[in-house]
Length: 181
Length: 411
Image (tube, rainbow over all chains, first blue to last red; front, side):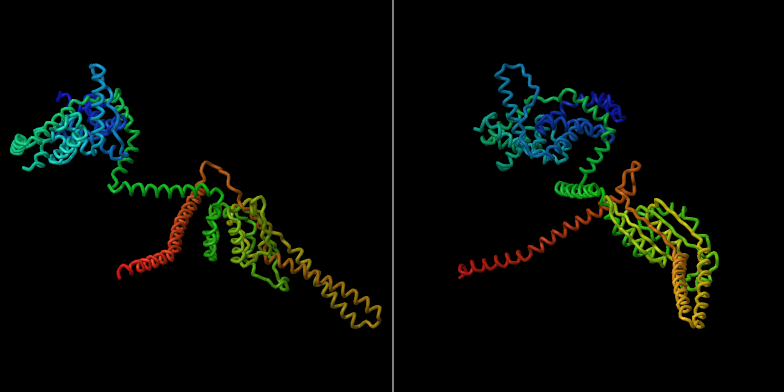
């Protein structure tokens, strides 16, 4: 898979749009999820994810391969999404993720939807930088050092941001996680 | 490690992101502290919920949309360069950029407004520079006489200048203003030069002033002028009299005042008439002398009366012919140029683009904008100046009030 990606990268670098389209397809869900969680709505998520891939294609010459391609993409995408969030006026993040086709019964579905909505709303309450850190960690499953590279901050900062973000989420979602004894 | 230190590290503990010593210390604390243990549990389940969160996937056609944008990249590049350049402005930008953009929009808007508003008003802009140029052009160079709107016209008239008045010995004429000495004229000098020129000008007043100056500079006068307006277009007729030897010069300068629509130059040889008048004058003068001598010798009253009658007739004829001779001499010495000046009507676009007009409008609009900005600043200054006395009064009043209010409390 990695050799495949290296090959596609090499071809994309030479301007091969077919190769790049394959790379886009391979990473689009991850990247879209990231921009969706940071921006909080599908429209902005779509915009910034597209921006990220377009920028990535143009900057491919500068990608030296000393980090994983996906890390590099994450960095571009989270910057694009954060830029967008900073530019727009603050707004509640209430859009519910689409594409929930869980096989459970209707009650189950309704309940899961409610949880989703709560999580999403709680994430929306966080400052953008904290949200980005916790999204990269808990929803994208990246390691601390990767997050540090993506956000271009020291690992200690990543740690404290994640910690404080989780703490804020915990307070907001107390009823879901149960209060402490 | 304090309670707070531990709590700050619980999150990292879940991720295994603490170093060995730290994690050992935190675990040791959690083992004995029920509150921190509970906090760790809730945090863990919180993270669990987050991680179970329904994955979000990119919408259908996402990759195709990206590709489409990349294919259009070339088209969009210029726009993206601009936006990238904008986004590279320093970070304080937001307010500065907005303020700068607003100011730029205001200035550009003002400028555009002036450009648009200035459909017919361009003569206003011309008036000043023409006046200025004219004052400085009393030097004899004919090129200097032409003001800006006329300059474009100078080339043509100069080439097509009337051949008639210039060569025919005009330079050899010495000014002979005294009509009495006209008898000594050479035959080639009995020439009356007249010209009739119709010019179209941008600015009527400027042209009128220019004609005055031309008359002045060539030692002539504006003998008459009639000026009127007709359908919003100023027109006027000027009769300029200039010394014969400056005729060509004056004609050239007058033609440079505007665009020449018609020109007509005539040189009339009045030598025959002049000689005839002089001969008749000489005869009459001799006749007069004879009559006077008869009168001396006459003794009878009827003879005297007859001679007297004849004498007064001769005298009258002499006066008449002297007047005619003076008139002819005057026509010869001072040439006449009749100038018909018409203001150019609002220009209709001839070609696709009239560069001069565009430049004139831009210049005018630019100046108006500068003037308006200065005017606004002036207004602002005036407002400040107007408010200054009030501010002083208010300050004095406030100080007095404070003093009055304070005094009792300080006692």
